[in-house]
Image (cartoon, rainbow, N blue to C red; front, top):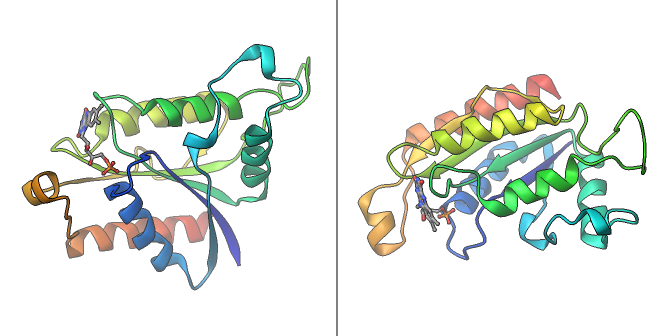
Length: 182
Ligand SMILES: Cc1cc2nc3c(=O)[nH]c(=O)nc-3n(C[C@H](O)[C@H](O)[C@H](O)COP(=O)(O)O)c2cc1C
């Protein structure tokens, strides 16, 4: 079994991005084990507390090191990456050893793929920025800016989203891309 690490960029109980991640988990269940890494468990980045790193940072690094790929499901907040997601990757970008001239981090060379559900722009601003961030910290992003989906009116008014077949089809395409590259 391959190991996939899922990151959901929303803390909300009724998160549609979490709903999306559960659909993806189901799709990969035949060949991958899924673990979740919650970006909201990490403290704010603080260079005064890097060595030794806080426990939640160690937990995050271990989860990343054991994963074949990170799959991020995230909304965009004001056309940006949600703060907790950015904060998590800031921590993960940092060297494991103080003063390491090679700056070896937990995410160096690690593969990632992006998906998001939000408003009419389908989280494109967030996914574009996230791709740039992850590549800057030496990760390998597959499937470009990834896939984005648009919530309908009912999702916003009643909190219920019923993803159509095209959502499932695109998640399946992403799952196939992952399978080929891990
Ligand atoms: C602070 C904030 C800013 C938002 N900005 C955007 C935005 O720029 N683009 C967008 O499509 N949706 C935006 N939304 C709406 C989210 O897409 C919507 O709340 C979505 O359901 C959040 O994802 P979740 O269901 O996984 O929590 C914003 C929501 C919040 C709370």
